Amino acid sequence: MRIEVVYALAGEQELVVLRLPAGTSAGDAVAASGLGAAGCRLGIGGREVTAAEILRDGDRVELLRPLALDPREARRRRARARGR
Image (cartoon, rainbow, N blue to C red; front, top):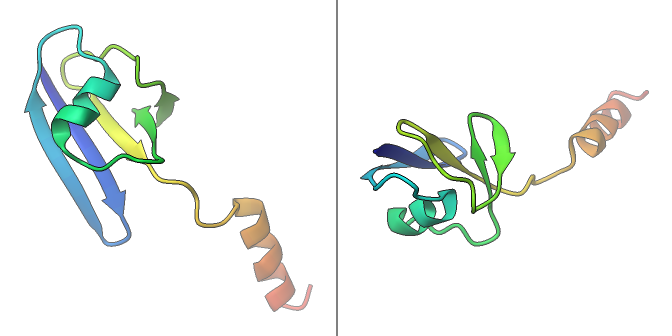
């Protein structure tokens, strides 16, 4: 089956296309991709999954980086900067 593993950074994206046997897990696909995934969560189609998730043909495994700043805190900072 055809699987994509993607790791997105600001302004660039690393994408690896793999041919893997049926029954391959998300964790196995990430390991086969060679992309460093230390500390990353995994996602497929915008939903978070575990490394044990069994993949289907055409799945795109996303390496989800930790947020640099909590979105609520970012909103508070913007509001303070505007004087609110």
